[in-house]
Image (tube, rainbow, N blue to C red; front, side):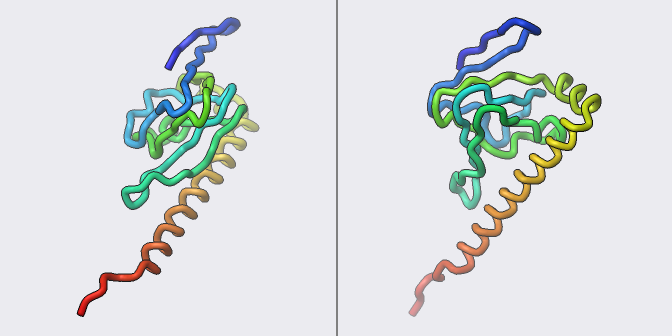
Length: 139
């Protein structure tokens, strides 16, 4: 990972190589979220000891904001699917933007609900998969 600061406004970016972990499930959110500037990021969740793809993020999508609003550890692992550049958004800055821009707040709420539905669907599918799996054969 390579961190740089761009002008104007001292915007910090981070660059990751393909396959590089951006953050891991269970990590401290470090009071920052990310906007995908270039590339793709795969977000995966551990379900039944296996990594499952939740979503692939592309340019213009917000990533990692859940930890800022909930204060909980990262709920999934983010990996650069290809070389990726992320704009770092400090928690205080995002909080200010949400409080002063109702349209942004609504957009983030909608996005969070889509992410929640996707996670619920993944967990429901895992439950169905486990319930249809043949049990041990005994004699």
